Amino acid sequence: MNWIEVCVHATTEAVEPIANILHEHGAAGVAIEDPLEIMKERNSIFGEIYALNPADYPADGVYIKAYVPESDELENLVSSVRSKVTNLAGFGIDIGRADVTTNVIDEESWATAWKQYYKPIQVSERITIVPEWETYEPVKKDERIIRMDPGMAFGTGSHPTTMLSIQALDAYTKPGDTVVDVGCGSGVLSIAAALLGAEKILAFDIDDVAISSTNQNAALNGLDQVIEAKNNNLLKDVGIEADLIVSNILAEIIVQFIEDAWNSLKEGGLFITAGIIEERYEMVENALIAAGFLIVAVNRQEDWVSIIAQKPDRP
Image 1 (cartoon, helix red, strand yellow):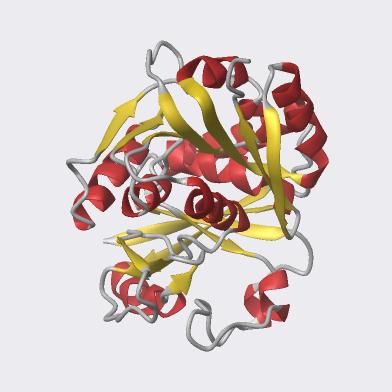
Image 2 (tube, helix red, strand yellow):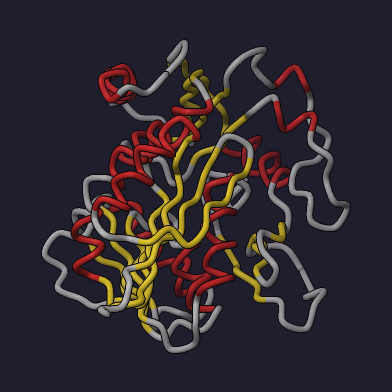
């Protein structure tokens, strides 16, 4: 069977929403090819991308690539992706070129080539993400290992928004916590929370593929009894009281459920938000403050921002 590589040439700002669009169209994951990767210095133990070829990268912007099985529906799929990517401009997102192209890749070539790009990567003080086929021994006594099967994707854990989210979880998750992961995707944040001591994790996403992926990766890590993945529209009608809510999604989406996040947190609970491009930072921060949250910390990596906000205790 052949696979179809669907490539969107866009901007760094548009990576997260375009990745979501590709997930919605059946991609098990996405690959992001950013020319800035070529210039990064990489740790010899934890660097995850090797032997980068500048010819594979765009001169401007980024490539967001997804892989779907070859089928008669390809033309309709590409047309739908192109339409939804174009519509992102209506949300004030700079999509850049927004070119959508396809390429046929035979399964044998892909299966042997893509794994070279996915190696163990340490994403926080205690969390290291390891592809399930790699042999890896912890370097530190308190290191937690997340085993991931990214399917037709590579680079899981390397995007700044994911790293910022896990770093915040590492800093603020307490043993016994109830954690809610809004927009769970592959489930990597849910798994991190569980390994850091959370007792119960609810993982929500509107995408059935994301729910399936979260369940599979939770089982791979022996955490399927701790993590409960459900199809849900953000935090609508969830009726829970969490110690911590984490959400790594588009800034424009985060501001839509801040009130629900407030209502779903215990007093003193934390709301970790990521997926926020620098240009949208003030919008999210102002919305959090207006809802009554206290800003605990703001962390940055490249052009991305994570905000940790707290629902204060009653006086």
